[in-house]
Amino acid sequence: NALDSNIALYVTPSEVVAGKAPQGKAFRIGGLVKEGTVKRDNMTVRFVVTDTAKDIPVAYTGILPDLFKEGKGAVIQGKLGTDGVFAATEVLAKHDENYMPPEAQHAVDQVKKAQAK
Image (cartoon, rainbow, N blue to C red; front, side, top):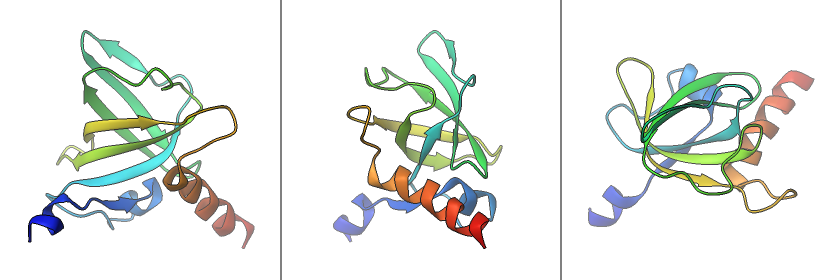
């Protein structure tokens, strides 16, 4: 039971919009930080994560990783609020120009496959 409470399910932005995200439980969402969406207000940062098909607004209070940038891959852990905003408790960013977190790459790949059909 303790292990189960520490496991965070991974969900793409398209799956969140489709209602497939866990309700009231922490999970991870991955994708790209949408260009032009990062807004800072003191320690709170608001931005949008996208899998290029669907967008999810995110709010995070804390210090972002140095590698966090618009247009780059990120994986965010937290809970989806009743207002549709993802309340993040942790933000992970990519490592270098050629790397995207596997979860973020998966989200983008899933959309590309769906669009190719």
